[in-house]
Length: 263
Length: 90
Image (cartoon, rainbow over all chains, first blue to last red; front, side, top):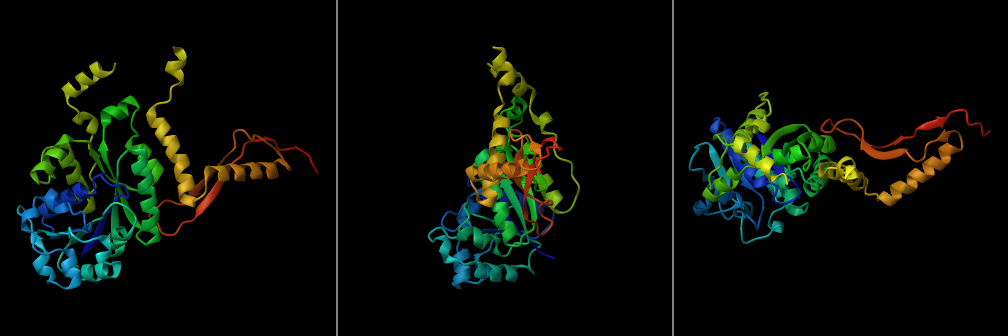
C-alpha cells in the first residue's frame, strides 16, 4: 500500500519544503520507506534543506526525458536508510515536465515506497499541475496571515476541482504571544475560514532556521517545531495524537520580557 | 481615551473579517459590488411581501456540507430579519 501526498500552499515561503523534509524524515524514522520528490523545477530547494545538495547527479527532468534510469537519480538520505530524494532540475523550467509524465513516473515508484511525498512549487501554474497530478491526498500548508490563507483557499478549490478530496491543513509559524495580544488569528480562526480538517500546528520556532542552516531536519528532536512535525507524522499514520499545548512551550523569560515589551 | 479602549478592534478580528468578505468573492468570482447589488435586489423583492430589516440583512456565498466529503455546490445564503409578517400589500 503506497500513499502519494502532495505538500502545497499556493503562496511561497510558508513552509512547504520544510514540511516535506520533516514529514518525510519523520515517517522514515518510524520505519516507513519514503521518497521525497522536489517538483519545483528551476528553483530546487529540498536538497539543501535535507543537506543532500552535494550528492546530486541526475534529476527529475533527466528521469522524465529518459537520460537516466530512475534508480540513478534517486539519492539515499545520510541519516535514514529508508529515506530517499528525487531532486529537481535547477537549469530548466516548469514546462520541461507535464502532468501525464508525472503520473507515469509515480506509478513506477508506487510499488517500491510506502510514501511518496511531493514538494509542490508556489503558484497555480504548470508546476502545481505537475505536483498534484499523481497525488492521492494533500497537505495544505498555510500561516495565520491574510495573504497565505487567501491563497490556501484558492488551492483548496483547485485541488477539489482536480478530484483530490483528502485534504488536511497544517498551520505553520504560529506565534502564541501575538495570538494572546489579539494580533494574530488563532488556529480556530483559520480552521473556521478554510473548513479543512487540521493535521498540524507548527509554532514559529527559530530552530527551523538553525536546522535549515545545517541541512538537518528537526523532526523528533526536542524543539517545539520538531515535536509538532513528529505529531503530524503520527497523525498521517492514523494515530490520534493531541495537539501540543504550545502556550506552555513559551519560556518563562519570553513571558517576562513580553510583559515589559507591552509599551 | 475610553473610546480607544472599548472601540478598537484587534488586528486579528480585522484580518478575519477582511478574509471572510474576500473569500466570498474569490470563491464565486464575483465582486463585493455585485454582492451588494444582489442584496439590494433581494431586499426589494422580499419587501413587496413583508417588512424586513434591510440594514442588518446579510447574504453570503457558502459551500454546503463540509469539505473533503465529495461533491458540494456553492449556495447563496440570505439572513433577512423580518420586522413585520403581516405587512399586507395585496
